[in-house]
Image (cartoon, rainbow, N blue to C red; front, side, top):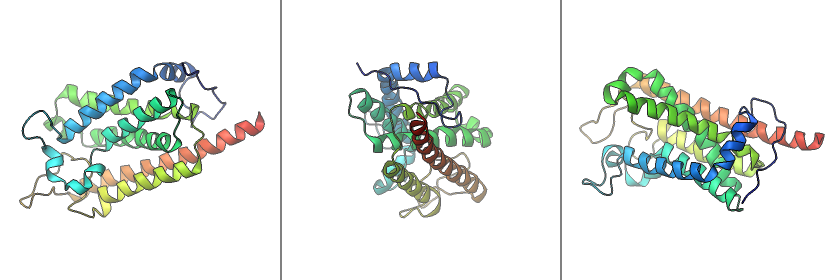
Length: 239
């Protein structure tokens, strides 16, 4: 059984969870891994991957070019990253690159999704039932909580942070600015419609709000990751 890593004395803004909640989350790592894997499977289904029904590819996956599918299901990828991160730590095979992908992913999608759900709530509630709306809102916020468990078993190395910044920075670019193939690949929003040419339209006002939220949150995640590394190093010097 993997023992809990020691809790370092860090400022509240990089370690906001109470110690009991951090310890509980780390002790429950395997159930959390399973929950996140279930969430990943649900997320791929939500985006339109339906392997057991026909058509097998629907909704957003059916519109997006296959070459860009890796950058479409952002939330399912983030829950997959945190599941792998926790599992590798529990197995004694800690991987810092995966830790940083999980940290950035859980913060980015854990904050962006509730942001757009709140800003465009009228549109979402027209297309989504109340219970599903509440589930999406709360489940994504729980990803933020998961992100703040990672500092307990990660040293936040600069190389791994840089890789995560490149991954999520590129994701922001193709989601909102330069799609490379087709139109921007961000998660479908209520104001969007499917056009005659088979692509989604991107109403300017909606697109700008969603893009601003994503970029600001990516910058926030970068700041928190680098600050966490600095604070951890300073804490060790003091000790």
